[in-house]
Amino acid sequence: MKIERAVIAAMPCFALAPLAFAGNRPNVIFILTDDQRYDAVGYMGNPYMVTPVLDSLANRGTIFSNARATNPISCASRACILTGLYSRTSGIYDFDTPFTETQERLSYPAIMKANGYYTGFIGKYGAGTVNPEAGGVMFDYAECLKGQGAYYKSLMPHGNVKGKENPDPDEKHLTEIQGDQVLDFLRNRDPEKPFCLSVSFKAPHCQDELREIGDEFPIDPRDSSLYEGVRFSPSLLCNDEYYEEMAEAFRTNSEGAMNIARYRWQFRFSTDSLYQETVRKYYSLIHGVDREIGRMTEELRRQGIDGNTVIIFMGDNGYYLGEYGLAGKWFHHEESLRVPLFIYDPRDPEGRINTANALNIDIAPTILSFAGLKCKDMQGKNLAKKFRRKGLYFEYSYSPASKKFFIPSMEGVIDGDFKLVRYNTPDSTWISLYDMGKEMGETSDIVSDNPRKVKRLRKMMERLRGCLSSSGNKAL
Image (cartoon, rainbow, N blue to C red; front, side):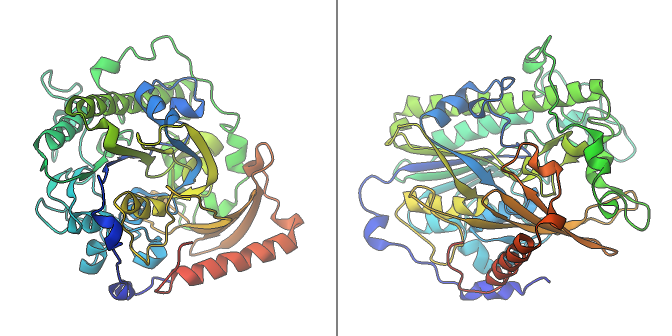
């Protein structure tokens, strides 16, 4: 049930005045990638990834090895990140619903701006259909993509006109353009203020418009030989039998439509050649992001502010690379929920790994904490301090109308090694239980063998859902 979004209007925001303007407040850069799964970085042990800049920052900072999206789709996840609220509280699940005026003012950029920071946004905003403007409540500087953006505008179809097979030779890749915008922000910011910059790269998201007429993952030509001669080994989870073992209602609805993740699997991973090509380009797009972050860190050094600039890196949701016979995200598996996350604070350069459960709703309160600020009713935790989160809640409920495919809604909880998930379609509802502590644990549904554990986790799910649907929440 969708809650009334008006409850947010009563939420007070508190700035810790004694801390807010004390000392040399650090600059903060938050970098978000689109559809980057948790292990698609070198520092998480992926032998194929070429991400030297990210690896260096992560290994000198704090790596959160169990970070997840509370809602594995970009529009909802970005709303969670900006507000520090679960989707069930904010009421934002889709691409069309905008923030209320109150929600916008209680977002971390607005609070940072109101407390003396020069704020900027670059890239895919993704929360509602109207992008924020420079000089508004949230941002002093804004360079937002229109919709999902395009890696190369010359490749895009227009009406009945098919796009080009190859980009114009003088056209820059979107990732490089966004890197240029980062440099523009850093060079033209207000030097009298600390800054908070949010950068949302499109990469490595696919180019949906090119799905049936061209290359879904257009890479920078500079990276065309990056993986020359490399053969990627599929996960043991890339086995079609796991898809066939899923509930029939998960695979096909009553009108004969196919699960969207299976629909997209067909033209990305259904053959070895498709798998190799998709993974190569997906990884290459991430390498392009790493290169631009390298340009950014070099500019910080050039300006002499690298020692006082905190860098936070995260993905907005996970991504299937053929596991369980699926593509995309949306569902309960760790490949869909887990994301890369690290915080690099040059004032505390000791590398460490934090295995506690971190969530996308933790970003907003964490960013505020670096400025000595907090918003009392944000539901996330401050990752810059010691924290504990035993159980966590996740959900997905956005399903665009289509005769070709469908997306079942779901919600679930994780408690220790156990994950309970409930799926819902117009025709069916079912619950599954998985023990993630066991190897290949999400391939075996153990719901029928553990009635007491199922009962306990269902109560936990109902309790957390109830907490999220009310105002005045404490951190969860």
